[in-house]
Length: 313
Image (cartoon, rainbow, N blue to C red; front, side, top):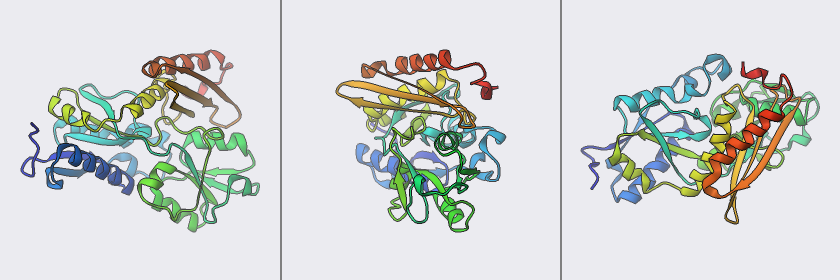
């Protein structure tokens, strides 16, 4: 029997952006249904993170992916919250000692969305047009395909980025289809990018729930909302990323899919300037996904020419 109630609510930690809150609300709704508890038995705790507070510099200059998770994980370790809800593409590949990340909600659309005010495509952009993105992966992938476009630094939530387009800061940008779907933003003009043309970020579209490793009550509760297929896919992709020592300074993409009883994984690494890309793919039994991710990463490390990974420092 759970100990959570309106008098002792389960505290759900999250960033305060509209998308982060939408993900926390989805988590709460699934827990309410699984536990047959009222909304009052759950408390949404908004935690300010450095990555949201600093918007005028690229992430690699201020500390990387951990800037979206550090303060939330500190609150989890301190007992201020019971669980943390994360966008998995923002998560470092290793968690702090004492924390466990092994529960995932059903994955949303994994694709990138190419967004302009008029709904045009990348092919419609003239040479010299400006595309805004803070993602090194998207920057490198776009430059590889359209080297005559100008890529400008572009951070902020969906609403902020759309405002920048209207203000003429850029002619186009990229967002995640998953985020637009979760926010119900059908009015945003977008073109979904085929993963065959633009491989998405590792774990894009997936929500992960983190907890204290020794909190077995919460662990039992979360098990009821875990989506096993998403877990198999995300763990394969994150093993690939981890073996490559991926960070926000690393242009890496990857996607695992389950098909006919097999797990198929594609992985890509790019030079940050978009001058070259290397890709590997393979398939395996679903439970062997992490081993396949490691194998593909090692193949890429073996294939890469001298200097390819200089960006890793």
